Image (cartoon, rainbow, N blue to C red):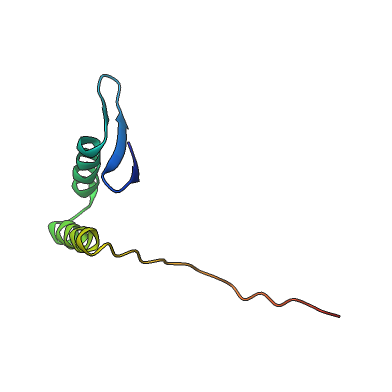
Length: 71
């Protein structure tokens, strides 16, 4: 299973193959199911719904400083 963007995914199981929106919903369900604890599932689901509706794209980058030596 892999997501390839918004409402796009591929699910290639031994006997079943899905793609598109249905595979994306299957991926969401499996991912939420694998989380431990009801509260964690609800928080992740609400966060996903909020980001999906707001088209919110947070970039979490860790960038180290770069010092160039001009001597």
